[in-house]
Length: 88
Image 1 (cartoon, helix red, strand yellow):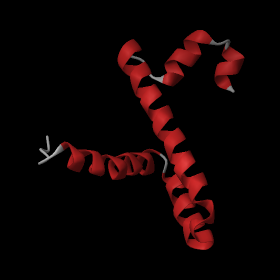
Image 2 (image 1 turned 60 degrees about the vertical axis):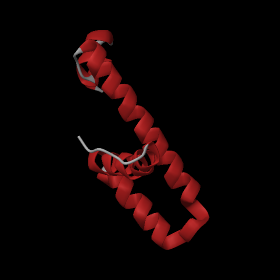
Image 3 (image 1 turned 180 degrees about the horizontal axis):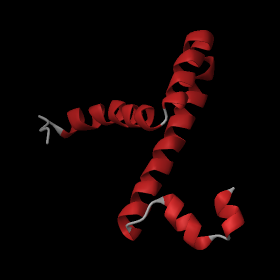
Image 4 (image 1 turned 30 degrees about the vertical axis):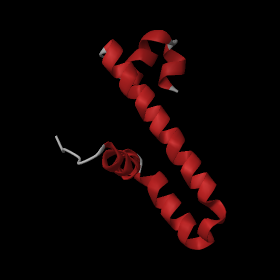
């Protein structure tokens, strides 16, 4: 585990760490954000920030669900919903 000289240094590094985790799990979102930024500059930066925040929220919720239940989202949906809904 990395040790930081101060808590501010650790917090400063959390932003890029979250963005890289989003890029790892959803590279299409990351590529779209980079391309949109290069084409439109800062005009659409709020869209990129919002989409990354939502992705981080969903990943956090999915991780909590997995830790609490020991199952992933697809397994829980199969158990909870009718077969037709699960297949779709």
